[in-house]
Length: 264
Ligand code: ADP
Image 1: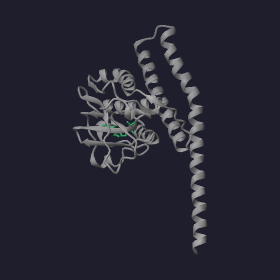
Image 2: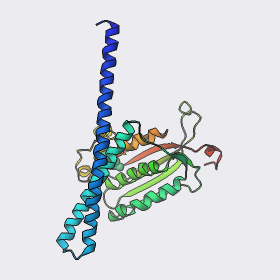
Image 3: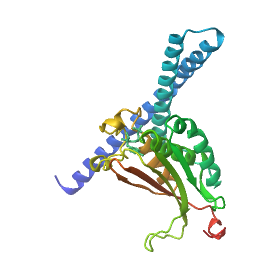
Image 4: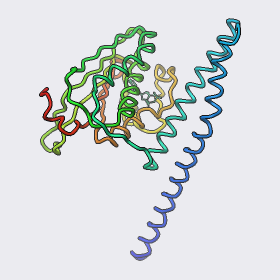
């Protein structure tokens, strides 16, 4: 095949692949939208049954199972719709100057029940006078919620979770005139095996490691988290020691003028 024909064939294949990808995104977006309505109704009525009359202990257990599964499906649908929006370039980010300590407080408060149930200790080391970040508040909350929730899920009862933030010190070549805050979520959990470490940011990846398997999940949290961090100009990485624990770190840019705020 001469060069011109080869380029034309490659162009056609690329367009076909892009078309298939768009069709996949549109399909996911339609399905997730259509599933939201019946799922909301199931959850609403399951909640109501317990309130309109007396239910026996076994009926209460059945209702609890319905609610837990509906919550799992809701999480899956919202993850799928996030993926399709991100991949289709349709995710709208609303950038404002955000106080990280406020977001960390909200996230750790919401995670409180999950952490207490496992009798884990959650420590926060985030200076109150951190300069503000430039990002989307809802999406920053989602990133942190995913990391703190994973830290708790993949840490046995009695373990420790730490959330820390500090000024990120980029290497000289890395520094492109933007300053960042580095946020870290550390745990003393099951850790990630060297093979799994290559794949944890892949869509739908779930470890085959027995203690990880025992925890329900969709395998979408970290892939979405990575995309959300990168879309907002940050980066994410982790260190993990098998059966000792893991630490996930991500960076977020400071708000304009943030560099001139309080030195760290
Ligand atoms: P999910 O938790 O729904 O399975 P994620 O994308 O959040 O999906 O995580 C992918 C996999 O990475 C998990 O199934 C688990 O095996 C591993 N993982 C994530 N966070 C941790 C952690 N803090 N400690 C150990 N393993 C983790």
